Image (tube, rainbow, N blue to C red; front, top):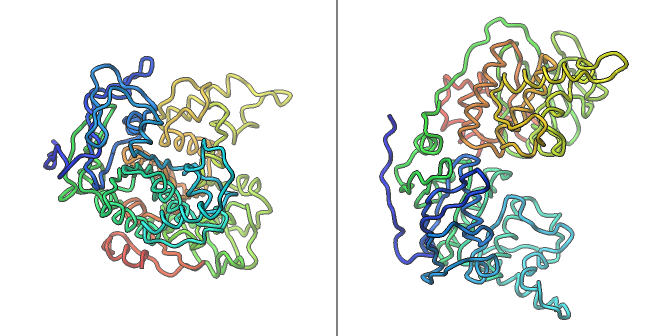
Length: 506
């Protein structure tokens, strides 16, 4: 039986917004069911819930995109309104920074920041005014950027700052941030959280949406939890733990225990010796046994994905050796790697892991087209159907119809399709590159159970991540990579998680 943390139903001080009795239905789906939500002025508030819990729907209702059913009560900064709209919400000071940021890579930093102030105003462009608008907005954040630099030259953390500055340039008083740290290193995350604190002190309210529960609890004063379109409650962040928050979001207890096991004398599936590729990684020595899950932890830029690309045949090393099941291999391309039994789940499943426009069925069988083809090379409908049913059932994937586009699935279910696709080739080695990016806490737990089940079959697994808890609780051994080198090895059964975090995030 779960014990709920203490609740706090109202913010301290004046409110920025109060939305009450919000219900929204899309056809037969009740997206929000009598949800109430309030944020104090200058408050940092977390909106938490699994994918499909109603978070995005609520944000769009507050931003005026969706209209709630009759009976709702809405107010912005103390002013009650009968109905909202995107122009009205913006006028009242509401801004939403979605995960894709909606910026313009070819425009300059200054132009991106001042963009909203130029829209709908036919006049000659005054670049002095644009620069001053941008400089003033960045000044409110205590940040300096090269105003003339093209946005594409900035790292993702810099683009986040530009998106926040653009909101401030439009006089935003309440900013929603959707997964703002999903692609940031710990140092970049710390910097962004410092910027959020600056916003809060200046009176700007911030609503944080993130699957990284540690940072949610670090930055927020209160947490509103949604589940299945309903309000679970509003809770003080002080005293809340990640595990309790996860339980509130999912309605069930989640496993937060070390699962490391000793592979014993199981045969070595992957072994590298002195593997080097100039500018990416150097002198990499590692070994993974059958049924072993080895974590590869390191900040973005450490060389983790670059190493994975070589193991999968996408790039070639300059020096060193790769052995698969005891035999030396030199892959000229990823087709040879697949043929040898290597599978790779990319960090970017949207563009590299799946063909978003194609069906769930087509994505599931894409690695085994020859196996499901009959005479003349034509795909057998019966074999395809059987393969899809097997893949979907084995991973308990929630789908409507196999003919639906894979883009209609949640992040967690899309990742299950990716895993089913690769399992169909019966791999010896499975490389997972940040396998739960963009996947909510409940779906993550299911994916981790699948990964352990695959290891139980004897598949060697390399799990790459920049999140210490992910590898600490789910891997048998952990390798720390920094500046292209393996610089440490850890056993979760003997190393406290705090020690690993200090080492990785130093």
